[in-house]
Amino acid sequence: MMKIKILLFCFLLPTISSAQISAEYQYNFTFSDELNNSQVLILGKDPFGTDGIDTLFGEEFIPQVPPGEFGVRFQLPPDTSITTIKDIRFGCYWATGHEHLIDLIYQTGSSSISVVWEWDSLLIFGLYDIRFINPYTGQTIASYSWFSDSSHFIIPPSLDKIKIWTTYNGTLSWEEYEVLTPNGGEILEAGEIYNVNWWDNELGLWMDIEFSSDSGATWSYIVKDLWIYQINSYEWQVPFINSENCLIRIGDFPCRYDISDSVFTITYPVSIETEERLTTKFSLEQNYPNPFNPSTSIQYAVSKRQFVTLKVYDVLGNEIATLINEEKPAGSYEVEFSVGQNSILSLSSGIYFYQLKAGSFIQTRKMILMK
Image (tube, rainbow, N blue to C red; front, side):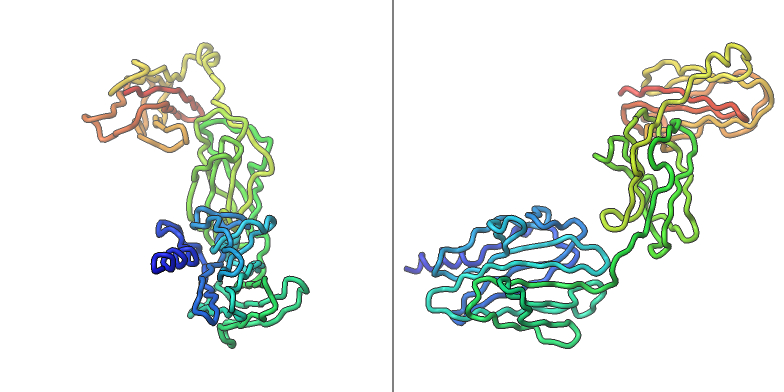
């Protein structure tokens, strides 16, 4: 007999794995009856929450108990046959409201189920208002506010379901960011400096700029937590890739943000070898050996005294090394680029780019490190 009671207790009080991630705001609502049965339901909001099962937050399908046993479960929209004990919905900083439908099963001999919860002690964007609603009539049975009311409600015994409407503190959200350039259709050249422009309402003083080369399937940061007060432009060195499926995303994803309306294109720089053959004034030669490991030689030439820079970049346009950054007289030069144990650089195998700038002359070439 004792073994049966223990098994029943475990069935009535399912738990969520301790490995779960807590939502930004979540609250425990404890449902109890006069026979000392109880069940905790967790509701809340998070920027990555949805109406369905969010395994990220430890949500899982938990069936309702059989008739005659005590059980309380969320029913998730739009398919209310999906029941669970945790329901985290989408919500960012600003005011949001969510409706949670709860299925109630009374144990045989019970006629009363009550609910208790706790308010935030310091409210910023947390739970502000709770309404209990008859799901059959839509009538609000009781309403509670965090600053003035209690945290206890007795469900009318005639109801086998109850709706909880939750409201979170803050103002209504509004449009805050808009990508202006690149906003779709542009053709950018790898390695060029391009101005990313946007509109913002300056209510959020920090934002991220992100880039995707695969129509938004994956994203990488151009800059994170950029201070944007009275700034609506960012100088971006276009990465060394070749893609027709590029997008820019600005703001604070997944809350307040905007994405380019359509894709733009990045192409490798147009070769200027024809121009070199005609003038023979400036040149940047292909490195040798290529592929290389651990070092390679780069040759270049300038026709007159000029300030020269020779830099190495990765495929995302991040500067890896500066090989030359000084004024050079006319002539031909050779510089060595080294990685590995005898160098301060330690790079992984892959494609890299080196770019020569001398006045208006700019040329970029590709090299391959193969370990």
